[in-house]
Amino acid sequence: MSRPPLPKNVRPNRRRAFTLIEVLLSLGLAALVMAAIATAIDVHLRCLQIGRTNVEEAQLARTLLLRIGDDLRNVAVINPVDSTKIVTPSATATTGTTPPGQNTDSTATTDTTTTTTETEDEYVLGIYGESDWIQIDVRRAPRLDQFDYETLPGGSELLPDRVSGIKTVGYSLHEETGLTAAGGEYRGGLLRREIDHALTRWAEDTGSLTSADQELEPIAPEVIDLEFLYYDGSQWIDNWDSTEMGGLPIAVHVSMVIVPREQLKRFTKDSNETSQQLDQSANYVYSLTVALPVAEGDQSSDTTSEETTGSTEAEEMSQ
Image 1: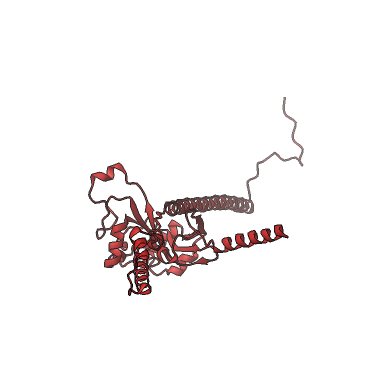
Image 2 (image 1 turned 45 degrees about the vertical axis):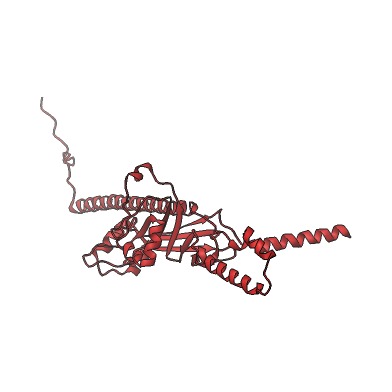
């Protein structure tokens, strides 16, 4: 049998290919999709890096502030003895048997002057510092392994440490903070010094304490700014001297600025970047306020108010 012929108006099915416009449109859409995926991945990685940097900064700031706070809470307090309030038997006997012709006023004046001079020259353990540095006399028991050595490493060859129960801990910024050294190495950051109290006093008297601090290695190069404020019971001040103030502050406020580590590395490589530009790259200012329970505030106003209240109540009861 023979197949019947196809109609003249019916053509066989043939597969058509993509035109040039369709190919270009598909390539463009694919490129847009790939670019969107790449942008999303880049944004995600950037957000992840920023979050990781913020967490590292917060952990570093928390560690440093807690360490400073622990040193402040362990401050050693030894109140000087006021010899004017001590009455010795010899002084009492002399008061009752003053020889005739001796000037009693001149003798009392001489004793008072001598006592006042001795009290003013006496060093008081406590807190000393200004807005950019602090020095804390800390009472800390030495470890058992430290008794095997006559001297201990203090971080500086000019000022070695020794075993003692009272240490002087100092916090400050490196003098070259915000600058780049000649070899391109960044030497800024937070310095911490912990040396025997007597050796610290000797270094202060000889003038070798500042040069010894410059040989210390920073414990946190990321710190570019440091500030201390001291509360005396009525206002915040930027300096404190326990000898002049007669004791410890009520509280100490510590604040520091930390830059990202990547920014610090870029600042090390690029010597043309200024410290102001480095300061602008900081994200947060971390702060901590430490209350000192051993501090003695100004109790004159409290005493006056208590006396006034007591006298008022007594008058009301009498009426």
